[in-house]
Figure 1 (cartoon, rainbow, N blue to C red):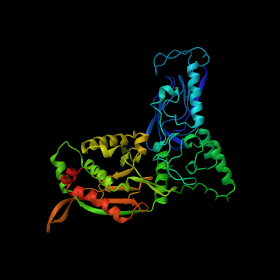
Figure 2 (cartoon, helix red, strand yellow):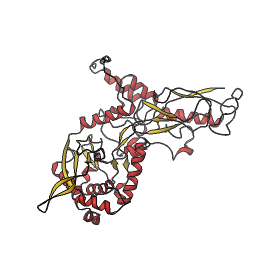
Figure 3 (cartoon, rainbow, N blue to C red):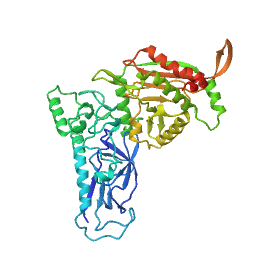
Figure 4 (cartoon, rainbow, N blue to C red):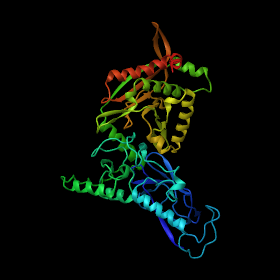
Length: 449
């Protein structure tokens, strides 16, 4: 029987590798076109990769926990002489396989064309025709897709690293990686801004005329008593994002102690009702309407502040593989109860590593409840390309003066980190007080919403 090897495709998130989390099939199983065969870890989530081929699984080329580079063998599938009756069930060994069916040949050709063009149809539905997959195709992070301009994900100009490069084929990505070229520094000339081979070759030619860079440092020797742990794909992505934020954003931090006693009492009076974070999220959304400059990004190329008309509220969650920030999409249109339901769902999904690419890239502002870790404050790092992040510490009993009398109150500390390029401290203080005042008098705040 003829065997075909499926190479790990470009996952569309600016990564050059992925970690195998769990195989969904075993050697000897029969698979169909578009059947999910493996779970892999991408930038900040786990996604299922479907097979572009039908047949019997001959070889799994990597074990769970192994890291596979884009363009390297993932699975080998041997063609069957007929379509299997039951997906995933073993069947009798067939005779020598004839040529692939017209449908299978067309599916493979479609995949190859999409891979070479960098269309983005690389995770779900790449083994089928466009008519059967139009509702399932993954889009590049940030909402950017071929033929569409002016979306949130586009930022920066030529020579300025973008958060994620537009989707490119493995051939182009491998060429850039082999020559040490960061694709985030390029502006694509292909349809919709897709980076092409000529873009990479042009950048390499320009780099060749520049002074040579310093040679890479040799691997550090392992000293006695130390252990070196390689960064996995997730940590590499987090490292790059946080380093970029600190390198590019001149952030400033303000903080305030807040009397959350009334909010605490409101929550206690409504058992089974929304949690404290849902109320705070509602107050944050209201403050963002009042101070829209913080629900924005900075277009450094055009020197413009881009304010969004919708609040997609990012919620920082410590998941199994690290910190992720899925967004409550359309938070400004939700009630407190709706926010509570969505925050609970997002949190549970993120902790399992199941957040979608859209949820992880849609955020326009971030709320971080580090009080869940029993700490009072944090100098947080802004989630680039956002321009601000609000943190909430633990709520504890502390001595407090009310109407000239010393008493015990429920106190929390809020910290607010903002991009000083978009506004000054007075605006940041106004935003902070808007949220703090609502927490201290939640009944009045909710009545105004």
